[in-house]
Length: 177
Image (tube, rainbow, N blue to C red; front, side):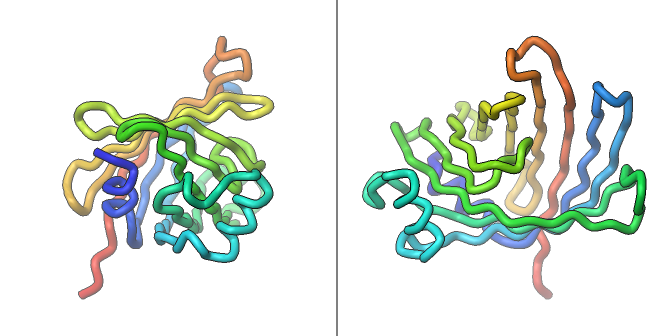
């Protein structure tokens, strides 16, 4: 699979159920999310601005996209009705057909801009590894069918020696009737 194929297969509205185990807190968390994945034009204002900030030429990138989410967790200590939400612009920079970098305006594990490396396995599984200032995240995303995908993640300490959190998500595409 190429990054272009991956983004095309991922576009749309998704309903996600995620189970996470925060080893540091000895807690399990169940999260229900609505996720929207939308491809952006290379000349989209936010893409152009982000590339300028990073001093990257638009000719180096491929199929930028935006992820928007709203999540409800059963592990909100103060307010169980609280909804977390956010948006992140993601900009792939392919190196080969199967590898590259992914610029993230907001990271998965830490709320800061991040540069991740990505690769695809022979079976089409997308692997994303991001080194943050305080942790290392590895995510895997694979498709079970056109409208069902799975995602797992492992969050490690910045030295990579300890596991902080693990999670598994199943995501179902919302289809308009």
